Length: 375
Image 1: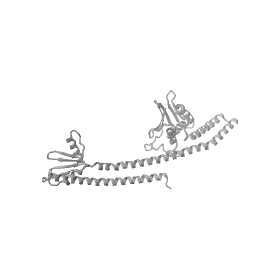
Image 2: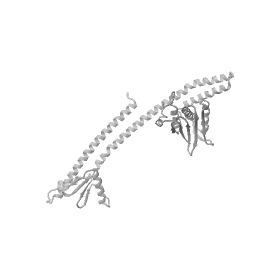
Image 3: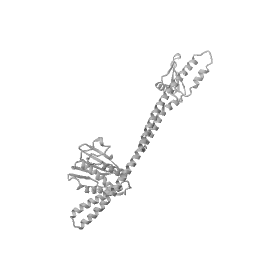
Image 4: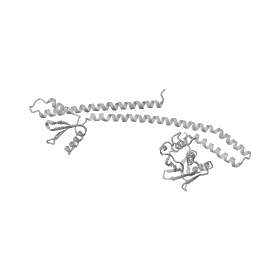
């Protein structure tokens, strides 16, 4: 059984072969017709010479039929001695006909070698017939149609692969949330039991925070693939809340710089999912700085758009990797899965109809990611 991808590639190969053969055959046909039209013009020139040479009044019906038989090939007969110009199968303007024919004569001469009538000091200029011109365009039209079909095939294949990839993402996420549910419920019960035993309150608070965090993570995974619950939220509060949790779990030598407007910046977002984006970008920044440096969050707003820049002072990203960093599996960490930025991109662009991209990065100087959200 052939897979859909294999069939698509076979279709592309077959279409390419058909397109190349069509171009070759059409090219040969155009050359043959071009030679045939030149031969017709040489015969037409001979008929013209014959009529001009004959003074006896003999039967010239054959020559006349040859001259009258040309109804498709544009011709210009130039008498070099008198400068007179005669044309056939050319639509002439109402004014400046001579200048128009002289310009046409130059064009015809650049395309085809003129036919000389040496005895009468005349030159015959001609162009391709309308049929031949159409035939010359046909291979390019055909090639465009084939290229369009190939493009549509690749587009359909890409959509199919993305749909399959999305279904895998959704399935894995929901299964992860399901598997986390049982141990989290057990942990909550154990915390309540330990509270009755009068354990260290500070220790229980930290355990409870981590348990709540696990609940939030399970909730995030459960919402992948579902329509998120969007609420108008102050984005400053979401960033601060995420950083308050990470602050005690990252190196003490990492500092956060928050450059926020004084007034609330309200955006319609899903708080758990957007907090996940901030968490992933912050952890990546901390890893890039090897646990030492400053992470800057710069928030600005315009009429219908909110911009959040997250900058670090880490090792930076090579320009050759700019387009790879959001791809699944790309990572510079020894233990990384390469899914953090992929998830962040999906959450921002699919769930929030926004945009996330690498704004700038310099090796050993730092990196800035930009998130754009619509009002």
